[in-house]
Structures are given as structure tokens and as C-alpha cells.
Image (tube, rainbow, N blue to C red; front, top):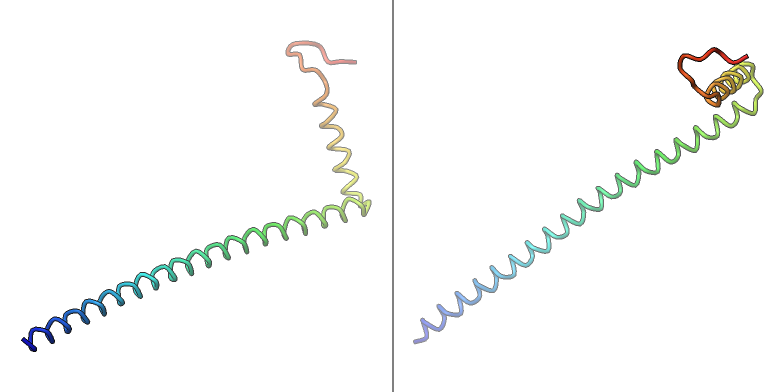
Amino acid sequence: MMKTKDQSRKWMWWFLAALLALQLYFVRELLAAFALFAVGFAALTLVIMALYAMQKAWEMGITRIVESGHPAVNLVRRGVSAVEDLGRRAFRPGSAPAR
């Protein structure tokens, strides 16, 4: 009788140990998934921050170039103005040019 009782306890302890191991494995898997998501979101945040910083640097550089009064900037302004004037004119195919 005593031997059966010890055998039952032995299987009970093995079952509890297996159950505990499965719980620890599950927790480890959840922590691993959390770590992967955290790394992914950190990488995404760094990419967005880098793009934002590059856009601000580009904006600052263009502002300085425009304010410099360089002859090339004036040439580009005249070109943009000419293109805008062409865009404002009505387009009539086959008509004579406006005078």
C-alpha cells in the first residue's frame, strides 16, 4: 500500500513540474515576443525620426539658399514665374497666339 502511495506522489510531482515548466516556457515566449515587438517599434521610431530630421535640414537649407540672393536662385525664380504665366493662359488648340 505504501509503495502505491509513493508512486502516486512521484507522478503528481512530475505532473506539477511539467505544468510549471510549460508555464515558464509560455512566459518566456511572451517575453520574447514582447522584446521583438519592442525592437521593431524602436526601429520604426528611429526611421521616422531620421526622416523628420532630414526634412527639417532640407527645409533649413532651402530657406538659406532662397534668402542668399544668389544669381542662380534669381534665375530659377524667373523660370518658375514664366511657367506660372504659361499655366494661367487659356489653351485653345488651333487658335492664333495671343498678342
